[in-house]
Amino acid sequence: MEVGKKIQQFISYWYLRYLLVTELYMVEPWEKMIVHTLFAVLFGLFWYFNYSVVTTCISQLRSTTAHDIELIL
Image (cartoon, rainbow, N blue to C red; front, side):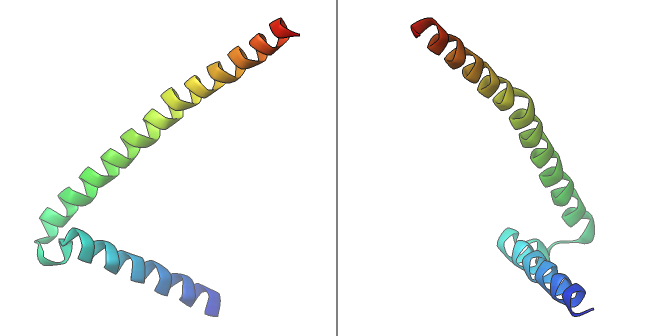
């Protein structure tokens, strides 16, 4: 049970830091929800970009490099 309490304290600590850094502790609850939603959408868009574009580019680089090495040998 102590591990669960430590995890809860850890999450509470970082959530408090998030509220302080973004200054969301002093806004209305509906404003806070809008900002949380905006951050979630931005995070989702960054994740999608990294998943679709960056991984595709990396796989193309790897296949191109392997093909170039075969041509050299």
